[in-house]
Image 1: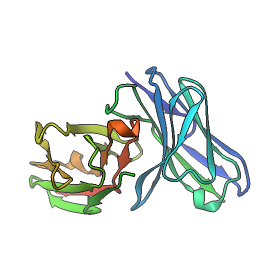
Image 2: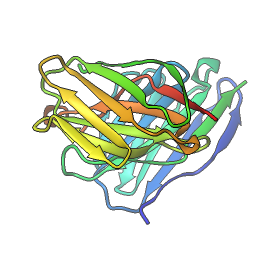
Image 3: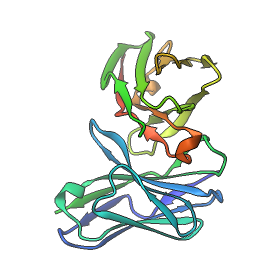
Image 4: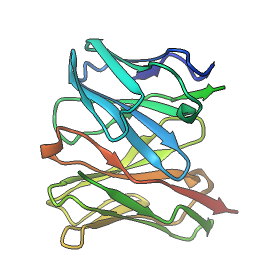
Length: 113
Length: 113
């Protein structure tokens, strides 16, 4: 059974903290994505990666960075968390064939206080 | 870049009736249009998709139609059941966008018993 696993279901962090969200996939997929989900706004793409050490900005990259040192792992980093980054974060992966199914993790609900 | 608009944001239908969700896209290069279902506490899962060389696709109670000229596509669910209650997302992507998937804002579908 294919799987995308996010390290935490719930996180509470303080304003100004550095936050790491981790995502691991076991399908040997080349492409990995981080989305942010907010009510009424759908899924907005933060960053994506199409290969190890490669990354591209999505639609809302401000305040975030990413790291992909190994093919199976894609990390989202909030350098200095702010309250407006309170949200649900979803990781996804797809294989190298263009236009295929995206597999999502279960999501991490981050609250910044 | 691609922009996907989705309507309605909420939809309530009587069990057994049909539900229709509509999306429009902006990038004429988009050629892949998946639909995802997100149940409470879970990540989105692909339920059906359609490619630009096809006008309609059906899988049991769900069907998707695509009008490339008008740049819109729709999800149709017939004989709705309680388990159809969820949030549904449409999405679009194209080969030129290197597998980047852009999602609509989501529709919360509720099935009334």
